[in-house]
Amino acid sequence: MQDFEYLMPTNLDQAIGLLKKYENKAALIAGGTDVMVKIGKTRKAPDVLISLRRLSALRYIKKNGGYHIGALTTHRMLEQSTLVQSELSALHDAASQVGSVQIRNVGTLGGNICNAAPSADTAGPLLVLDATAVLEGPLGRRRVPLKEFFTGTYRTVRKPDEVLVEMEIPEDLGRYGSAYWKHTRRKAMELPLIGIAVALKLSQDNSQILDSRIALTVAAPTPIRAYPAEDFLKGKVIADDVLKEAGRIASSADCCTIRTSLRCEAWYREEIVRVFVPRMAKLAAERVKNR
Amino acid sequence: MKKVSVCFTLNGDSVTAEVPVTWSLLKTLREYFELTGAKEGCGVGECGCCTVIVDGDAVNSCLYPIPEIEGRSVVTVEGIAGKEGTLHPLQKAFLENNAVQCGFCTSGMIMSAKALLDKNPDPAEEDIRTSLSGNFCRCTGYVQIIEAVRRVAKGNT
Ligand SMILES: Cc1cc2nc3c(=O)[nH]c(=O)nc-3n(C[C@H](O)[C@H](O)[C@H](O)COP(=O)(O)OP(=O)(O)OC[C@H]3O[C@@H](n4cnc5c(N)ncnc54)[C@H](O)[C@@H]3O)c2cc1C
Ligand code: FES
Ligand code: FES
Image (tube, rainbow over all chains, first blue to last red; front, side, top):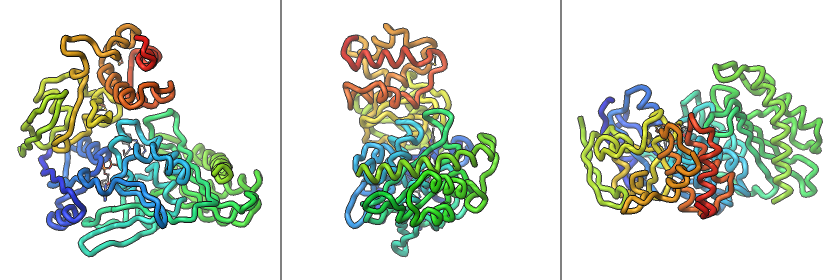
């Protein structure tokens, strides 16, 4: 195993200072469930690991002028939050299915997003909740809408000296409902073969779709929004054939670049998108009514 | 090789260890403290054989960087029996329900179950299944394990 130094700052300023000091020699570690696996597999490590684990000030789920979720919030905290369950349901669906209890106890939301795997479970839900990433570096804070955050597989707009501080979700989710489907063969301990997140905003009488957002994971090199399918739904009266058509559009080449991989063939992934976009839309609509 | 010195609580005792900074909690437990209850099955968080309890939560000790343990409290399977060697109710229930075959997964199963029962003494079967979903057993077929945990939850061991 390659030697490294392990630093444990206790606040954000210290962490950013260390990132600046060690520049490209350092990497951040939060829960370590991606970082430690990578180091173990490659036997290679950065010279310096800067741990965010003691930044307890970045572990929170708050609602005030929107929702704010600290980057160090664990999947387990999201799973056990009744606020997340009732108001950010798709995120709750996703966080409570990451790995195992042991992984959820340490794995963080920030790590899931910054690692930027095409299969990251929380990415789709955060995309349909229209989340914004708040980054902080030596030059201050900046906000990047999550839909502009992923630049490639395992790549993001985050600069090497920036820390993801929190995810912001805009307020006014009153008429929105959301849902996430993680398609797997087993019930636990598996990455999604395909991930489907849907958020719908319904009219007061629940009949009309006022706004719609659809996100797909493992359907392209990065988590993506399926804009043509979203546009098709906007303004429509909710009905089976309408949702079915949205599923067809979402699974087409207009929205995604689904591929065959070792884990799954492309045609099957397309079928799952086609079938589960309508189902998740229905569940999201159900959840608007039940709120 | 760079070393790190950590002070923490291990099964109720204050301990100090000086080990290479690259070591995991699992490696430290097994090779420094010679507590071999936690096992290495996969080393990458998949199998749960290395499960221990840190500050009340079940974690995979194979993925836990040793510097992070500073100031925390760790409980391993060696720390759950009574002082005179009386078995913990979960240990007894595993024996009595034939929930152990080769035994490689057992300490991890028991620690995951203990973390659950410490927080929720009366879990539904679904909660038990969820809590054990990160623990693989290649021998028993799981049914006896879940049954053993359920017996302890109900208090009729
Ligand atoms: C057995 C197992 C099962 C898993 N199952 C799933 C699953 O079902 N679904 C899923 O999506 N993932 C899964 N994962 C992957 C992983 O657990 C998640 O991606 C987790 O959320 C990562 O969080 P972490 O805190 O452990 O990240 P770390 O490993 O600490 O970090 C991941 C990356 O993000 C960077 N980073 C972390 N925090 C910040 C921050 N605040 N600012 C800037 N950069 C940061 C790190 O530098 C690193 O590049 C699994 C992993 C394992 C080992
Ligand atoms: S050895 Fe830690 S999970 Fe397998
Ligand atoms: S008893 Fe052999 S792996 Fe579980």
